[in-house]
Amino acid sequence: MTFPAEPLSPFKEHGTSSALPVALVALGCLASSVWLMLSGSDQQLSRALIIWMSEHPDVAANLSDFSTLYEVKGVLAATAIWWVWFRPAARTQLGQRIDAAALVAVIMVAILIGRMTANLLPYRPRPFVDPAVAGELAQTDAWLQDWSSFPSDHAMIFGAFAVAMLRVAPRLGWWLLGLHAVLLVSLPRILVGKHYASDVLAGLAVGAAIGWLLFPIFQRGIAAAWTRVPATWRREYLGYPFLFLVSFEIATNFDGARRILRALHGALT
Image 1 (cartoon, rainbow, N blue to C red):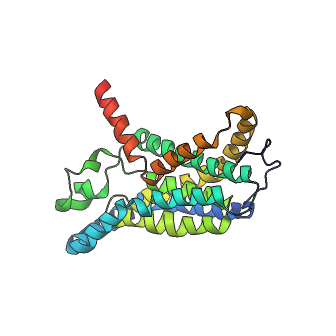
Image 2: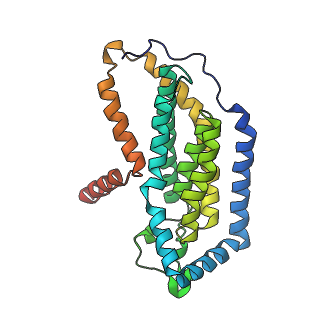
Image 3: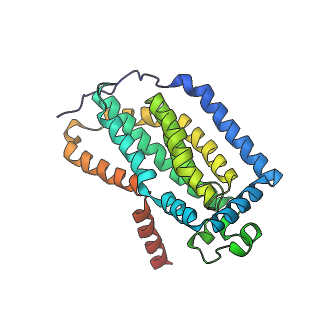
């Protein structure tokens, strides 16, 4: 199978009617995040949830396990990327693959921005490790103790992916935003005390901006770069293994790659 010589041009603007709803969602999340932090409601809600979970340990254990499952986080995103790659005749074959590559690029940038903001902004302890919130229930030896809570990188990553998907398949994008990014990924992390509600709302707001603004830039950039790749270098037998590797890392939230980087950093410092 060979690729067309030229990318789809001009690009069809997918999901542009979603611009206003996306802007309202992002602004609403950002405003709610600020209000929760300034009013003190953030800490009150998290403390109430931690106390309730301590009284229902079975529910807490199941929710904590659920919040770590790859199947409800990266696996769904990776599956959606493969669907975009192979979806039936929505665009030219090359156009669909450019869309899939742009979605991957959005995820990568969201991961980078999520980590940078958490590291550069003032440290905020997670609710379940903060004695000021969890009291005697604080898990001060938890491995997440040194990881800042604000903003939620999970909410940012999967919010960015869902909003970018709005430009490819609007109906699927809204399902991914509401059902996946909010209910399956973000809400359990609030309930078990891994994040404040404001962390998640801020992550969703920033993620929405990343996904909506950067997807068309990546889409056009990848298309332009493809035209400069010599035809003799275009090899599907290299592309598919690479896509599998990338989608595997997305499915596992880059856990393996991060462990390798941490080990290398520790060995070199």
